[in-house]
Length: 291
Image 1 (cartoon, helix red, strand yellow):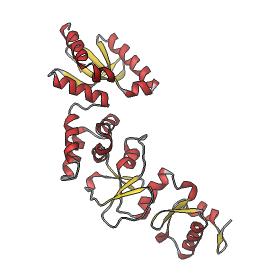
Image 2 (cartoon, one colour):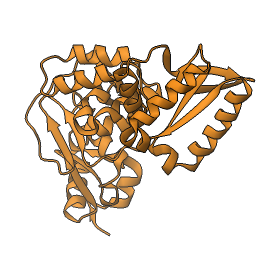
Image 3 (spheres, helix red, strand yellow):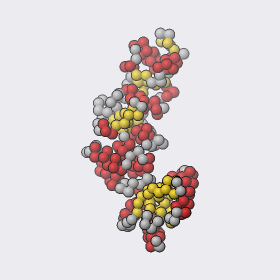
Image 4 (spheres, helix red, strand yellow):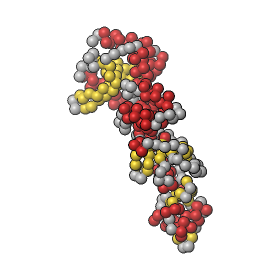
């Protein structure tokens, strides 16, 4: 086992790790860290910042390294989304916003960018972009899905997203962000819902509310699209219904509860919305005519 001045590396990691920032260490400990790095026991993530090699790909360790490396740096993009409102979003690299020289750090991407302090959160010592700003940032990569997930998580409201957009003007890509925000006026929670809202608006259907909250026998439910006066519920079965059996089961309980309360329920799939939009509209109009 490598040692420097009689200090075992394992002891150093156990007592002062798992993350080391050279500038905050005494000189003797710095020598130990450098020796451990040379021996392959520690890996450099960012300038002067090291972790045990077995943690070099650990998401939490890589995020913590940003805070230790630079107190002014802000984690943005998919990493910020995972830390705030989108826990299962894939993170290929950690995006970092900062004014200043861009260091060498494999697995990181740096952006010379200033972020309004109002849109920076503190997450256990890490500076992270707020969900509203993160969601509109990710329109570049995920389109409307980023907005939908953020709204569904309740981490931000649509008004918050508009405010974040306005606070960071003249950014490349803002035209598409604005288009997606306009497309989100009825607060969709999925790509399928977003498409259904477009379809209803294009046919000038009125009197509907998206994601209407109701209570049935003490339980809270959300109707995807509700024509309240007609007591007609439109349920949109998107990708989650195919991929997650729990979502499928939960929706059946919701549908049964709605029917018991006197609602009529229509269900449409994403494929129907894409391939048979006229069928969808005709079915809804027929049901409304029966009210």
